[in-house]
View 1 (cartoon, helix red, strand yellow):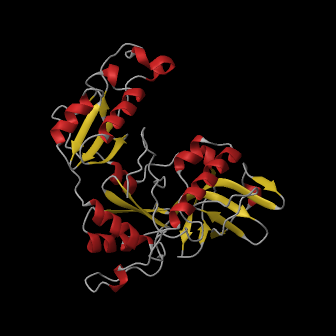
View 2 (cartoon, rainbow, N blue to C red; view 1 turned 45 degrees about the horizontal axis):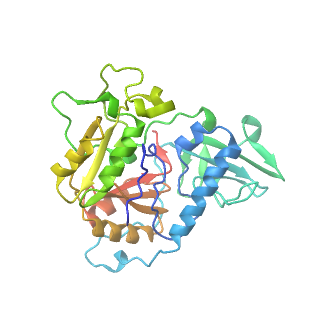
View 3 (cartoon, rainbow, N blue to C red; view 1 turned 90 degrees about the vertical axis):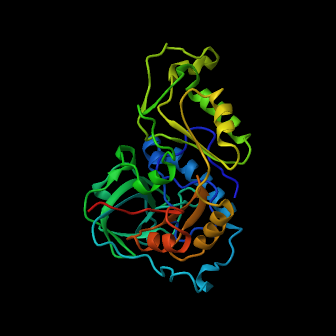
Length: 345
């Protein structure tokens, strides 16, 4: 698979990566993104994003093939069902009621208005207790963060729901592992070396240069690393135009190449003055492609994509069983499982 990482700062944890492999998502359970929900409180604008995502996922899903992992005698048995949670879980999605019971859509939404999806049964919901939803043609719907118990099929509300516009989730630790910086920090820590070439425009240029390097695999920005920014002029880069107020970015640009690492680093440094990590990939791209295709056909998997030298897998909930299976089947640190419902207790 060709890496489809964004040419700018990548999505926040929890977002479904581009490059989804496998069949069309079941039950509408590919996760909604916390960034989409919190930064776009207007539901109609949020729907436009969801519809676009659904369309992209549907196109990608057309190429799914049968899994070979189940027939491999050297593989451990794959999980057959989404497990129940022993504690409380939380998730972000579109709560919907079309007159047939309340559900929560933790993934793509149908291209319609009002929206549609199969969703997951949501028990204990009271529309009178919440605000920030719409009621169109007999369908009630709104974006909410919900917390409750999970028995493997139904999410039962145990705490008041929170409007997505007011929800500020903590980063998903699983997803953070897939975007973490691969290099060890310098002795003095990560720091911006040249503020004039460490802004958003410079990052875009740097990723373009990275993509031209021999054996380029992927490039992404680690937004969670601690990066020191030295004092700088208000407009350190004259060619930034109206974007001059953005200033240097506190990110580490990660680049993976199978070619000459030193040569790639030197070329990128000419246009990028921010923190930089250039390394070789840990995993064979062809092996990851095969793993993504096989994993996408498991019943408990909603999507699987190759991203940043790993396979990122979306599932409804995982108690560790799916991650353990992936580690044993494909090797430790080759697959990152990101569940839509996260354990909070």
